Length: 272
Picture 1 (tube, rainbow, N blue to C red):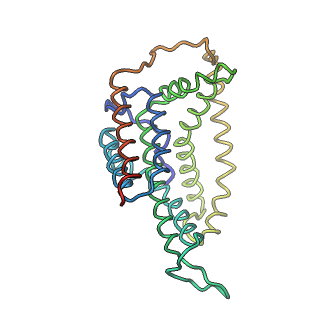
Picture 2: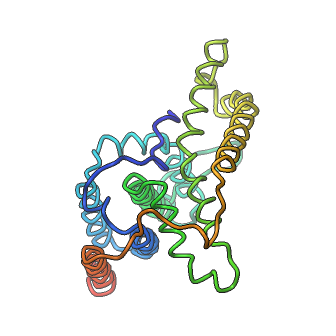
Picture 3: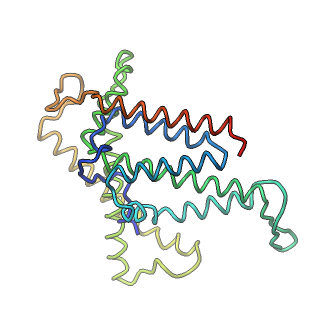
């Protein structure tokens, strides 16, 4: 299950989405997230769905890869849905008696829970496309470019960008390590599949110590490798390839802004 996580992975390609300037791509990703949590109407979500599907097609990433990355997140969808179904106040449509009390599923909870699941789904797909189409090196460069104005107030932009990129890059690595540890312990008689949720959670506890040890070992090896190559962050470093904003980036921004304006018009002017 853990090895299917795609957030943090990079798939080389030559699609238009791969060629976009990383700083522009990251900025548009932030706007994407803001717009996603701003829209409310069904028609707006329909337009946004078409937009997301278009991004997937343009990226050249197979739908099978995207779905494989969503599968490990299904438990988040289930928990989010249950919390919203039962905890949102409103008109009760179904009640479950529990001892002397009753837990009710409300109409408002069903609507809000469904909306939250859709938002989480689009959020995972959008952020996955960002990392799948941007190499770690370009991702670092893009984050550093966006943080450049903060250098005037002595903010270490390069170091922050490097730490964020390493953290994102190691998500699939740690997920793969977790899967290996689970298989090794299963071969020794551990059981992670049977029992209720509490028992399964307790069964996962023995994974934490070897996982933390592995994470610290990898961090130490990475630090040693960087020191052996005389790595020194900051403004004195130069780049072999400088990223510049091209005409295609400007066209991409114009298309994206046009789509945002369409969503805003749909949200405020269309009564659906």
